[in-house]
Amino acid sequence: MTYLLFIVGLITLIAGAEVLVRGASRLAAVFGVSPLVIGLTIVAFGTSSPEMAVSVQSALAGQADISIGNVIGSNVFNVFLILGLAALIRPIKIAEQLIRLDAPIMVGVSIFALVLAFDGWLSRLEGIILFSLLIAYIVFTLWASKKEGQAVQDEYAEEYSSTEAKGWKTITKNLFFVVAGLAMLYYGSNWLVEAAIIIARTFGVSELVIGLTIVAAGTSMPEVATSIVAAIKGEGDISAGNVIGSNIFNILGVLGLAAATTPESIPVARFILTFDLPVAIFAAMITIPVFIVDNYISRFDGFIFFTYFVFYNLLVVMRALSNPSVPMFESFLMAYIPLTFFIFLALAARYLWQRRRNASP
Figure 1 (cartoon, rainbow, N blue to C red):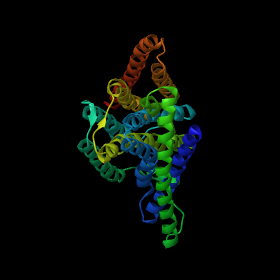
Figure 2 (tube, one colour):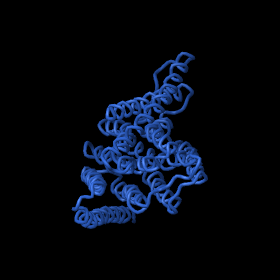
Figure 3 (cartoon, one colour):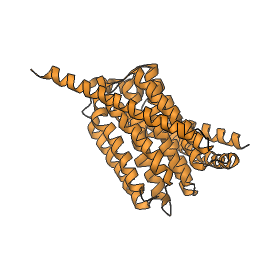
Figure 4 (tube, rainbow, N blue to C red):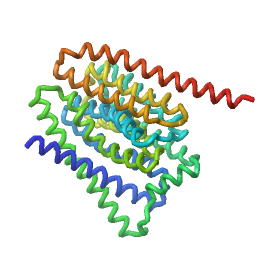
């Protein structure tokens, strides 16, 4: 019965996100919002609505490990698995704005979250600060979108433009979708969190492990669908932009709102501060040298990202089960991760040097 509740909750969450995004994006189109803005804000943030629902619900229920583990695990999942799989399907062309602005912002907010939580707590004030930064980021995104080239605008118009006739009937229908989507997110998150707690206790693993793995993977399914479909269509800007926008929203919006709405501060486990959050920061940081090289995520890059995802989750599960091979596996990762990271840095440095050399008279 518990597993059925988990599956029903997950399906309800995913369906609720889809209904919410569909209603909100079409409603925005009716009121004249451009497809580019819809894609960069409503769709990118709407796909993170399951994380929002689950983390806020978990925080209010006193399940801090699920709340924070869901955010951190989702961010790792988004970069390493979603971008990795998308690039393996088809190399992803990266927009200049993602390299110059959004990826560094993703790194910055990830590090800022670590700084705020370093004392082992996320207070209500710190949550309000994070959420305020999200509002500032949305305003900045809207301002920056006005400078995008016609090619990018046409790409988003093809994906998110609405052909529905304007009128009260259309507005009423899409308002219903928005309300229905929010209701599905509410009930789906309740069922998912309740089932996740029971599963963790049944198998004797921590709620943090459940939050970092099963819950994080489940709530990231909308990002998987959006990014993989975009990659198959060759719409790299949408695929990569959705992941980065969702990660920024997870830190500022999901974590911020979860901390801001709880009566007391949210405790942050020491293991999150010393391992999982640094991994999420590393996932954000490594996108920059990868994006720089020819403005692409190649299939080789995608493969390396995918291996990071596999190794990270293996280590989380092995530690949860107290596997005796953990020290040996950690030693392997201590060699593999710096090696691949410096390869990416070297490739990026070589690319920048060659471009500077070609540009000089």
